[in-house]
Length: 88
View 1 (cartoon, helix red, strand yellow):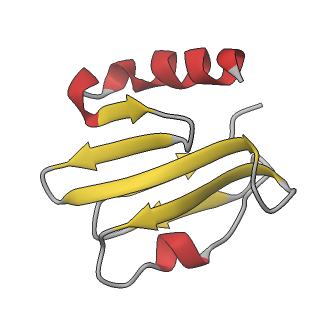
View 2: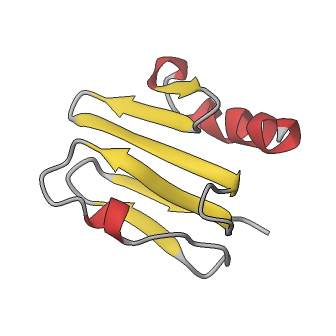
């Protein structure tokens, strides 16, 4: 939803603006080492939360982690040095 996208854009201020792009599918986070596509809100599998849909890292652990929905959970992509958290 729009509020979530605005929050993500605000949170992205710590990054170079060029690394994030928003689409219907989610947010693509791109760096010099690769990319991750993060989906948020109501997901296609019926759950609500945040998940890494795709990544070009070699191990795909971030994709296999599935959906997170609690502030105590985190998605980690070590090859891309990316962490995704839900903040209350």
